[in-house]
Image (tube, rainbow, N blue to C red):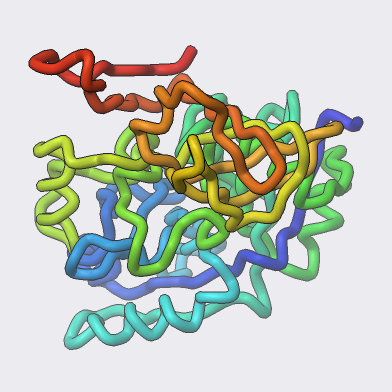
Length: 324
């Protein structure tokens, strides 16, 4: 397979937030520190319900100035199918803020670039979130893990030609999925449940999607309470399967449901995926089963997973597990 790969996923679109109040407006709504996002740095963030449940996640980066008169804007790499809902929610909270919110899907497109030398080909360092102007738009290293590669926001009409000129061959979504699932990374509502998922179940803390120092934001109180009281009982974890099964399939241990599969992609004679699992299921004596497949969970190196104490550990502290 060609090492330098790119993809223009139809599942993503671009929103823009402009105006002098753009940073303070978003700062009170989303989980990360918007002041850190700019033309040279991207961040990953989420928009929650007041009860701390997931509504949207997206990548935020500054739009490189094309000319002196261009007004600065923040660009959001967001889920296309739910962009109208995100746009509506942002406008609800606009009130008297001096901001303009718009969808740019007809003129801008999101691209994914990955492979052994993808970052070097784009002139990017192996630093999560590093960004630079590229191809008439902006390219940035995935803010979660540089190992996944880069994301780009480019002019729709020229995106494919720019990437081909840089030596990228075009891949299928499944090629990118195999890479991200091996790393244990999510992709919007393919893996996160609207009005159900809490950020700490999905790795937002370890992957830099939450800033605990920036002040109040929507859903912050309950998210912080969950963190400091150690109330996480489930985690989204990468899994390998000995055969492909449908996403959404329940995962059982000893006949009892302990979770469910999210994204799943075929890999060789088996499959790779993400599963939301009860943490006590990680110590189940028997195998984990989804449909007719055996499920083997993994703990990625970036994840700090606190296993609940077993009955034979009564009186002891919860065992901590962290993958290699």
